[in-house]
Length: 262
Ligand SMILES: [Zn+2]
Image (cartoon, rainbow, N blue to C red; front, side):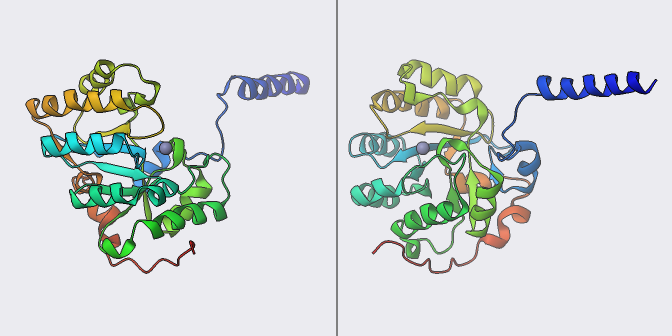
């Protein structure tokens, strides 16, 4: 009898061990963290609003082209910036701000976030935050996007402590523009999957981004025809039904950040 039970238990354990998909224990589970508003993939919204985000800039060639298209269409976007590139091309960031776009922190060196230490998360975020001139933005929600969109439990703890809201993107709004699949394909991916409150992921740096620029020229007029308003992530967050609960208390003056760059 006991032998039979032992065999059944053993079979059950083998089943769990071999058939359960292997999950990296350190990476946060969307369905556990999304309800607290610490990490945002998209915003449940009744309004026809979407946000367009660009990662990995600033770029001396493509960011300016993207800014030209956005200006022509009278649209504001959100740029997640890499600190070491901000140091190289500060004028582009100034233009982004001057033209009413929103900027967010995308680390200093773009390290992998899969195994990053807590200390390194602090260094990477603060170095870039210092460059983004916090004095300019004393009353805003600090936005952070981790490289590769990886959020571990460890890094999330640090990012929350640093006052950051982690912004990822809608799972159905990653057209993988960095693989250069063709501007038409990028545009089609975005337009056919579109839902209210989507956060769209594009890249303005990291390679030849001319397809992204061309796709943008297709997407923006079409979005307007479809009745969508394009807003910054900060504006989109305000449509969240639990906005005050999630973000209201953080709309306070940001403290001075100690400089890590001499
Ligand atoms: Zn990136």
